Length: 227
Image (tube, rainbow, N blue to C red; front, side):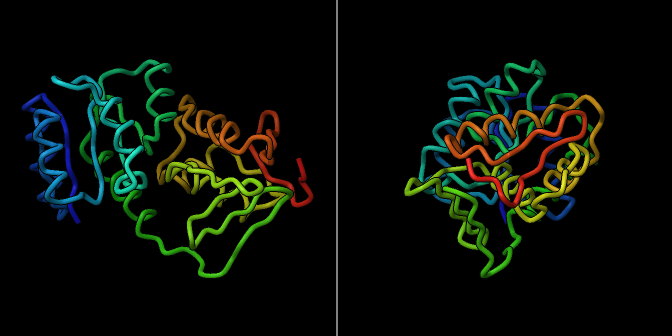
């Protein structure tokens, strides 16, 4: 396992690298995007921690390039940034970030969320289960999503959320349940991560909108949905 951290703040970078290495997660830090890209030529990481405000090239630009590359389009990417506005968060998630941790953050929380993301990345899933609802086809084990004949590219979290809703078909899942099962940490009452991911997921699955909003509770996929 190898984690790459792109962070130009020396104190934050050194603390995160030191803590993760001492927690058994081999981590290399980069102050400049150019150094990061050079390292990517030699070894692809298991996971990437990425700041937004960087010299040479901002983190969102790096994220976009990573998601456009066949080699890294499914690599788990966690954004570490001082920017906490909903706009910046939505842009990052729309570009394919799997999680978003605003600064300042606690190291124990960061470690827990990294481990939760890595667990789900390493999860082999079920070998044979497939889902078909109307035009939607999903194979969890093969990581395939299709609407009709069109292949749909989802981020890791979008894919996990879709599979969770399909596995719980006809059952309403609260935002708390979805956040806990997909992200691995408790809903804090204000986090809009689930709503943002549902919105981007619906856009990607058009015209097959199988996700139903249950007002005041959460979301579900109905077994007889055919849209």
